[in-house]
Amino acid sequence: HAKEGGRNTYQFFRKEMRGRNTKLQDKEEQLLEALARQQFVLFYQAQINLESGAITGVEALIRWRHPERGLLLPESFIQDAEDCGAIVAIGRWVLLEACNQAQAWLDEGLIFNMMAVNVSAHQFANNDFLENVQSVLQQSGWTPNRLELELNESVLLKNIASATITLHALRSIGVKIAIDDFGTGCSSMIYLKQLAVDTMKIDRSFVHDISSSEDDILVRAIIGIGKGFRHRIIAEGVETAEQLAILRDIDCSTAQGYYLNRPMIAEEFADFLKAGVAEHLLKRQGMPGDP
Ligand code: C2E
Ligand code: MG
Ligand code: MG
Ligand code: MG
Image 1 (cartoon, rainbow, N blue to C red):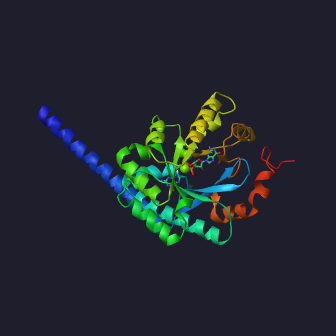
Image 2: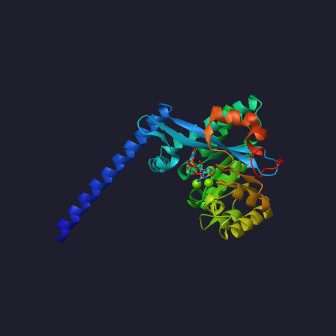
Image 3: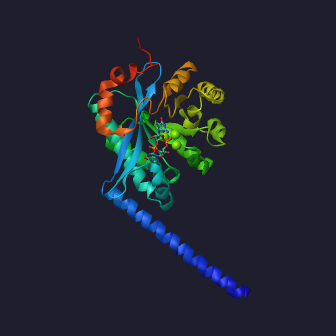
């Protein structure tokens, strides 16, 4: 009986595994087909200096224009892409597209400093990643020290030893590194100690409650740590004038969020860059330059 049970379990398991594998293979096929059909698109969101109102950086955020399901946010496909491995090809496209766009805006005379690109764990761990970054910089002409790779804890946690090597190699060619969603994982502090990073992005969950809870103590502390390390600090997810005012009050240098601008397609973002500080930002309550 036991033997038979074992075999049944085994066969069931085999079937499950096969089912799972074909599912992943389907996903991979769909994602790579979407890539080939140019269904992915980058949206852009500004990183804004809270003292001057200047746009210091731009974060590229992927979306999928799905022929049936409409515009899909990364939460509905990035994990799949990561699991099936399609993220390597997609991530390569993202890097090239973002750097090409950045260089095109620069050539048009639009002013901003940094292009920030999100990188996921599988992509970062891939052997060809460094080479890919270098070839993208070469192809696009974008300056290495104006490219910032945003890595979150799951990326760095995978293998801190090899992550450290890759990070140092990236920095040696001039590329900047940001820790994304800072404070959400329990080992954020270890990165600061061990890893070469330039920027800390304070997770939006802290910014969200900054006016109504003791989160301002945490944000103040994070900003203090960042200053100690001479890191650039970006607060994510600023949605209200009040949050913005508090962040400025506690000397947070840079912020991103719907209150400042929503992620938008390249053409719209170019208009936003052209209009610059005066049109869009200084008229907002709480920004410098207000009457
Ligand atoms: P993230 O890098 O932390 O990006 C910030 C997310 O917060 C973006 O969501 C952005 O649209 C959203 N956001 C910006 N301002 C506000 C705000 O004021 N309030 C709120 N509630 N949200 C705000 P999005 O575009 O859906 O991206 C989600 C995550 O997907 C990103 O988080 C990043 O981890 C990942 N992702 C996005 N693009 C890429 C990509 O090209 N490659 C990879 N590997 N991951 C990506
Ligand atoms: Mg990010
Ligand atoms: Mg984030
Ligand atoms: Mg996030």
